Image 1 (tube, rainbow, N blue to C red):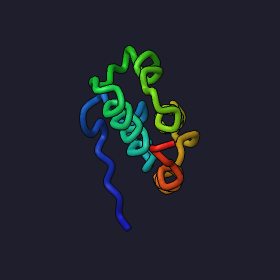
Image 2 (image 1 turned 180 degrees about the vertical axis):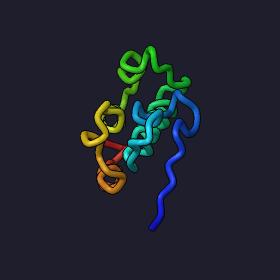
Image 3 (image 1 turned 90 degrees about the vertical axis):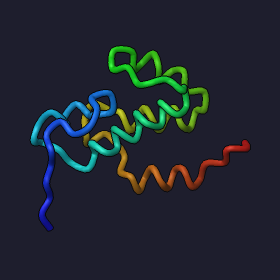
Image 4 (image 1 turned 60 degrees about the horizontal axis):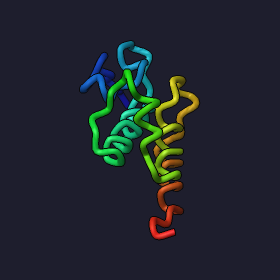
Length: 95
């Protein structure tokens, strides 16, 4: 299977640090998912300069934990999308 990675794909506010390089893996998408999740939770555009400050505003602890996991600086420290899906399946929004 051939893979093509575009250097610096998409908007920078959603991009993983390694998106500016050719050393990309599927974990760039995990990072972007984390940015989108916290944007939906706090209803503000992600600001890379205020990222830590904004993540604290995520009131749901499960989502806040997922955001922190997804937005790890090191790609290898981020979960896989399957792990994210599994965690969301266990999540009970009513409790």
